[in-house]
View 1 (cartoon, rainbow, N blue to C red):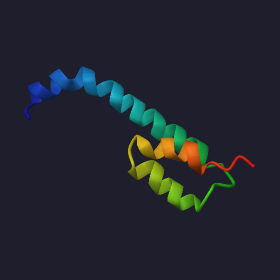
View 2 (view 1 turned 45 degrees about the vertical axis):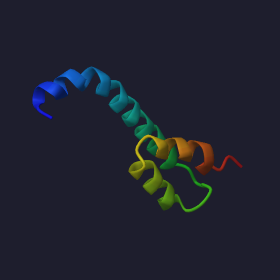
View 3 (view 1 turned 135 degrees about the vertical axis):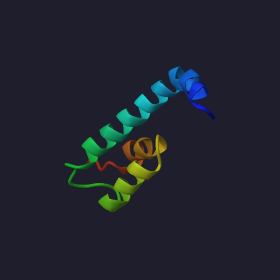
View 4 (view 1 turned 60 degrees about the vertical axis):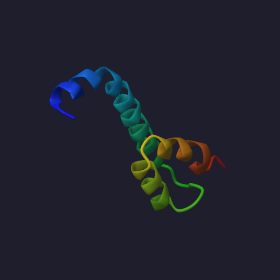
Length: 67
C-alpha cells in the first residue's frame, strides 16, 4: 500500500479511528475513579486497552459494578 491509497482510504478510516479513540477514552475515564468492578481492576485495564473497540464495550456491559 502506498501513500496515495492511504489518502484515498482516509475518509473511511477517520470515523473508525474517532469511534475507537472515544471508546478508549470513555472506558478509561470511567474505570480510573471506579472503586469496584466485577473482577480485578487491572484485568479491565488490559481488556479496555488491548481489545480495540470491543474491549471498552465489554467493560461497559460486564465490568462495571453498579451496586
